Length: 349
Image 1 (tube, rainbow, N blue to C red):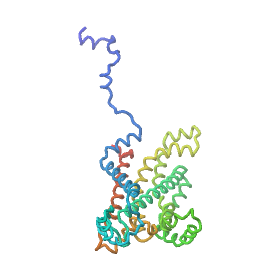
Image 2: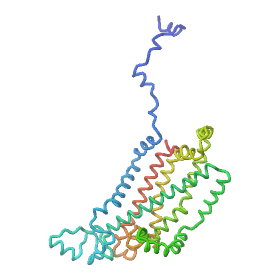
Image 3: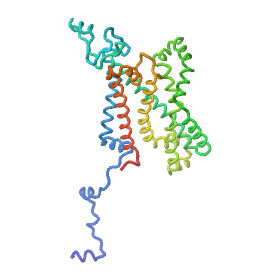
Image 4: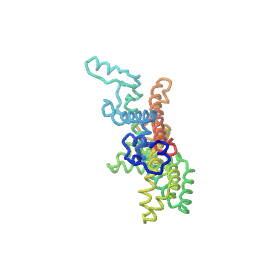
């Protein structure tokens, strides 16, 4: 039968119903393999070279702050007599005599301060303190803000109205004033608690100022997170799967835990990552003006403050903590931007 007759005939051709071979199957595949939200986000995050570089820098900073001090021969509070105001990689006369006697002396990589304390180890511990403050503060903000914003957005109505007016009031409270008031109010009670109870001796080591900073973070700084979570919950609670969960008799707590919070997890991670540098900067600023960790515990802000007096004679003392603060904040900001680009569905393309 000719090709024309085959096209015009009404009879079916059995060959048209034969199973497709592998080559024909592959030619029909026009969509990529389906992946989960997290796998897709991680794949796009790995393709972001700037975000991956910032992640490597963050890991190196964490190693520098938390691991390197255990292998460094000096401690942050150690005052070495005769080694005051040494330049980077410089030895004192006493150390030079020890070297001539055949003893090995580890160099002061960034020199020493006016009290003979090694600046490098103080930079390590100061970075550790700033990172701990940033991470702990961001965790507090995440927990309080996500719970508060979820409740306000899910129940809505008068509950949402009252809760968000409270947020508006908290926005007007000056945080530095609250920290100063807390320091004046809690200084002597906390010191008495530390002296009378050995289990609270860590209070004197951290300082009342740093404890007050944590309290203020828990009281005031979660409002931004609460607003972000509330906006996400308001849009998600109108989705069909939430209506289906309600129709099946799911409780409010189960809907919030299993359906709402899990779907805003990407936003929570991104917002928390971006909150870390903001918390570190706030702590450094407060330590710079004298409201922070207690001496001799170092902080990047307090190290910069101590270096101001000798800025013309010893500028490297100010440059070291300033560069570290800038590096930490920049790397966390770039990491947060990369996570936002990877896990925000609106920026998927």
